[in-house]
Length: 254
Image (cartoon, rainbow, N blue to C red; front, side, top):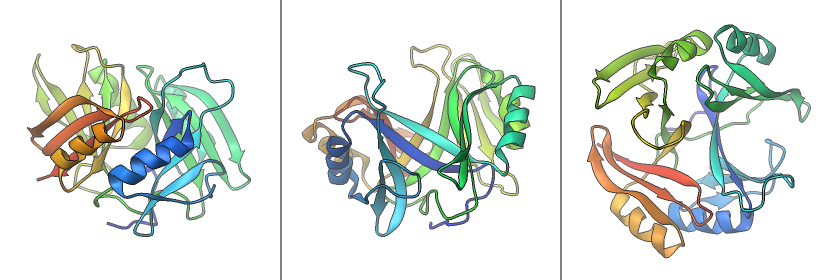
């Protein structure tokens, strides 16, 4: 699905922070068939493209990053007005960790933490930056919060006006889905990971046609498996690390 008019409160950008952009381009280009541009409207790094659509960004890690820091993926949401949104974050118990109201002259960007301390990014913009494909092979299709505090749903309901629905609430598995304002289909989920050793984070799922084929290519390209391909309620899933130790998840939807 192509979408050049991502509205507020929707995921609008995914970005890999990499210590070696060229190596990342090689890995993901071979794995997903992504092409790459020179630095574009995000102001730095490169855009990943597939069949002419914008899929993601890859940016170099800052010079002050600790030596040996692995690559990592980040998720950004679009907001109507950055200052107003940051006020809502504060009122809901979150915190703005960094904010640039006039990033590159035509957008605002901020890094915030939710009420449980998990980071995510937000963007305010009035041009055509952002993802232009979702729910297609090689593109993002599901966005999931892994959290140690399942009650953090209240934070996201407050700041994004999401409709949240708990699908399981047992000691073994707590999960909720969220739908975006004005929509009915779930766009992502919130998973309680308090019983496992995974750090809290936002995870973006990449849609693929064949998870098992992708799993084989990951190791050929210098990555590895975190979770072998397996069936889930939403489709066949695999979780891997790339050649620079960045974790990512792929899904073959039902």
